[in-house]
Length: 447
Image 1 (cartoon, rainbow, N blue to C red):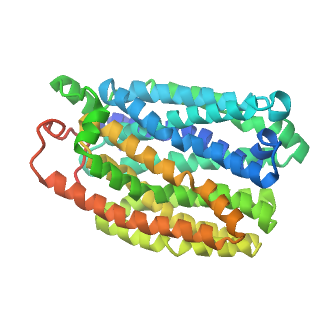
Image 2: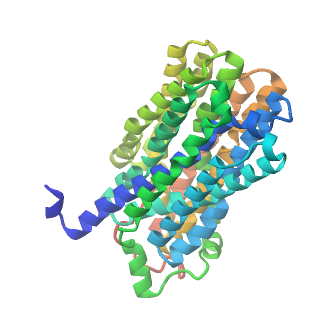
Image 3: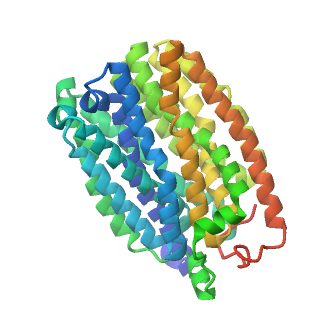
């Protein structure tokens, strides 16, 4: 059926889905561009005063600052999103991310202004983290809350597609500038991927400004049941759910940044793989992610969330040792196979998390809840490159970094099952007087 014959609410649901996808693509592009740069160029540009290995570690530390700032963004923009609405908040996060990313592209280096350079880099990275901390939850909700009940998981997964698309664009940008000489790359070309964000932000703003507000927010405003301080209501009634969600989610970040950031640095500096060759591996793995990731939401719809999550995370555990073992051979083909094998279960689980988190919290605190939970998971999982690099430097062996990522995966499996059990039990109980008093708005599914 052609789009003009669809009911108005279905048209807006699809429009919201596309707007969520496009906006999150831009935000993730900005975030991933930094991750790639931290592995390839930031150490000699901003930490040239220390030994190379220490410079890489410091570069990864600034990378982690973005994750450290994400819960702050989740609380700040979650409050605005739950009080004022999803649309206005998403416009603000997109602008903030674009300004900080372009600012990084304009930064002087350590040789030009000394210690002020890494300090400014860290500050702008923190702003990126605040912006993305507010973006993810809003993008998921603007898509799922416009959708029909039975399609909530699918629309949530569609919003998640911005992650692989942003990574593909970020990797392509560095593949393009990476063809230049090292002198050109470190001299000026590294700035291009950051400055290109300005064009993408303008496109994203045009799309987002045309959206209508989420039906869930409209219903809350009409009934005057919006939470006065959403973060207080969240931790007053849902602390255990938040903590389990954090533990359930951090493996997603650990695996992807073990591959795209830590493994990129390790493979090019220790194994001896070519920079362009490994960037191509990341690009191909990201393309695979784009096509495979939605299967996680489909499995959750057909099998049930609990069974899908259990099977996917069990399959993930052996893939990390396999990936690093194949990369260590130095063979491009084997390294590619390892990266793809590790990518598949991780991204299928990532597709499920959006709907899993959105279903677990009531509308009054939902933006704050899923943004804070996801952001705190990112703080732990995003620290992976720093921890892995430290373990590698301390032991001289890749075995300890591998064991660390596997243990995180096992913890997330147990936490995810406990999270889903608690969510199902709470949804079956009588609604609580404050945050659960409102009937579930259209587009919000139950566990």
